[in-house]
Length: 381
Ligand SMILES: *Cc1c(COP(=O)(O)O)cnc(C)c1O
Image (cartoon, rainbow, N blue to C red; front, side, top):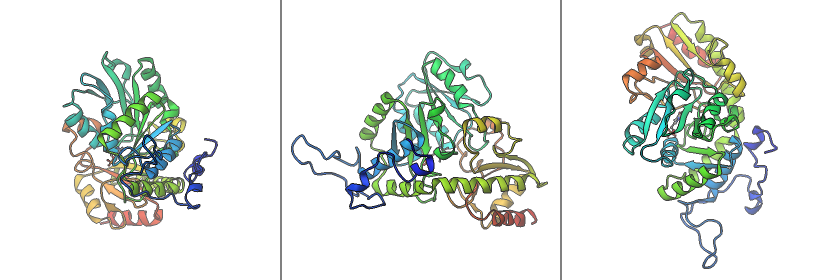
């Protein structure tokens, strides 16, 4: 843990694994389903790849180090990670879930976790007193900060005082900032969730997910579930995420720089009613972000004057691509109301301000001038 995060993206502090592989600089892909046993009752440390595979294990060590957890588990998607996490709860348990979450998380909770007997309360954790929603059967609070897509910022340390007092888990989906900008475990969270598909992978080429924890008991439970239900990340995909992480620091810095330039340009446009980017001092969560994160990330949301104009932007951008997902090197624009949040109940959308005039941008690492030129052309149509 002595190395800074830029270095930890390249090297594990206690890593001597490269010595075992002919000095290979790139960690090998162990494309094998099973492992030979030296003798009865003996193991090389690996038995069967559903349980663990060396490439996945190496990736998990890297991600645990980046998030400063005692353990990280790599899954075949962010949703597989969250679905696995839900297995630590029992029928009758109650979870407080932030009301502005990734649409897929809300879909999972509403359609699968509820069916399994878990009860949810949807709460605006960034502004409400969360303590008043805690019941006898409450087991966890699940948040994102900043939220998707409205960029609401919750004070993680403050919330963790409440969850610790009531002995319940604080789960933080840290996808939007990545461990490069924010480490929720250090602020009192018990479990960190990542869609590794996003900034960790960083190239829009692999689906992956992570759970990272600071607690031995939770790590033990999750290890049992991953080997039993089998949603672990495949060796080749593990390698792709490892490769993505090598450039995490430089990608995050450059994308953030571009996001700020784009946010400032959008703020000056008459057809833009509102720019929601936590890096702007006008953002209500700006000061909390300065306290709990090392940066503001590269996700920004803006609201335009009409639905027609929103649709025209989506139709006419060229360099910027109209696609779901985020966190890659390419700039993508999405329409939350029909895409990421299509399955979110209408009243929740309305309450969160996700209207048909709201667009979300995942700013990439292209030239900011070219990105602005693309928008300037569309705005002038
Ligand atoms: C994409 C995303 C997920 C789901 O991850 P997948 O890898 O797509 O399964 C969860 N949370 C957030 C914040 C996301 O952006």
